[in-house]
Length: 571
Image (cartoon, rainbow, N blue to C red; front, side, top):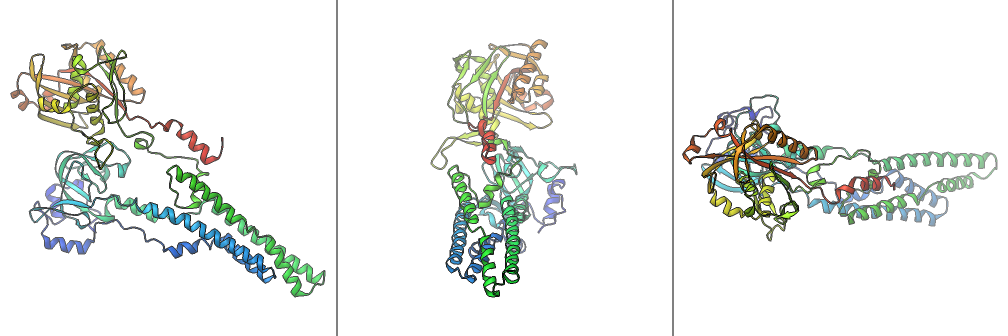
């Protein structure tokens, strides 16, 4: 393995090359072969599975099962052969039934294991190659772009508007912006570092050239996989109760058997052999041979009911464990919500628009006072949505043979703005082509906004060059000196600023996400080239607020009460 103490986010690209003994043009093929021998394949190691025979035999070695085996033997020794064989048959049938149920679930879960991509693009010996992801080694120069799944942990060397979806590691679906800048803060962890990317994550936007630092089980994804494999299986509450009951029954049965054996010999004066057989019969009478199959059948029925609800249960005993649940931890995005960011409202200083339709399908309308309105009929709506989509790098792919759903490439927050524009009747292709981009100031967490500069086919206030900053309402408003209303630009007064802040707070209190859009007009394109952040993002024209939400699933409202009722058995 590579040195785990190396802090790659704190190294310059040159130091990364030196540490990993690689170069800009990639590893030589001979060096690749050596490292593949040294580091092995870039594959996640799966926990060695128990053989089917071992899993089968485990169903006959629980304390209750052992008690039944002993009980059957005692019954045979006491002369009731039929009873002994019946007890053994019950034990066998129960074990076979349990094995079939768990083996069926095991097969279903095997199809869910492959999360890493099959191929990767690398530069080796100065030549770009497409290789199997499992053949990556530390020091490889990996090329990633929008839509790619990342095959290994790596340090970014060069990047262009790179955003990565790290939800497999963090659970948060919002893309994280990445860059090649050095991280000097020693308190920043690897997952927090902006200059590192990780195996199992997806490139949401942009492209990058990165150096592989870790592969296989040494990646952050591999460490998580290792944790899940090394957790020791604990007995369920039901298994613990059955074991406790088995021990109690065993002690009581033996005590009663010994008592009656002694009483028969010393008080009733029965022959020892007859007294022994009588005591064995008393022991057998205490064994609840119907308990184990009753429990198994009850759990199996519960498993079948859950399977009909698309819930896969790997172990029968896990069903009963649900009844002991007191705390439920759930991810919000994509679990309680649809993970389909949707524009809910549009707000200007004089108008509030409502949008219908959910998700990324461009189906719905823009309503003003309950009436459908189109961008071509409302200049404020037109430029609010046009500007928002021009200041966006997201794309939406239509359904196809491989994917029946609309697919987002890029930031979901930006993608929903494009859907809103389509609902208002704006043609995205024409908008992008006619109002082409000249320059971009990428989003920055300190500025809390991004800005694009565009040449306009339709003049604003007589000018055909403009910038469109989009970001946090507070930051946008502080830099705005003007407002656009009914197609006219005028000075923004303090009362209107207060109204904008109140509107932002009102939407935020409802749990909605709010972005603000502004613009700035330039005399010609020559002004754009010299525009810096401190000059381009001031004295702006406030355009409006864009209010969005990730809509909850229909079933989410009733989900928690229903879950608690089902797992507790209460009504």
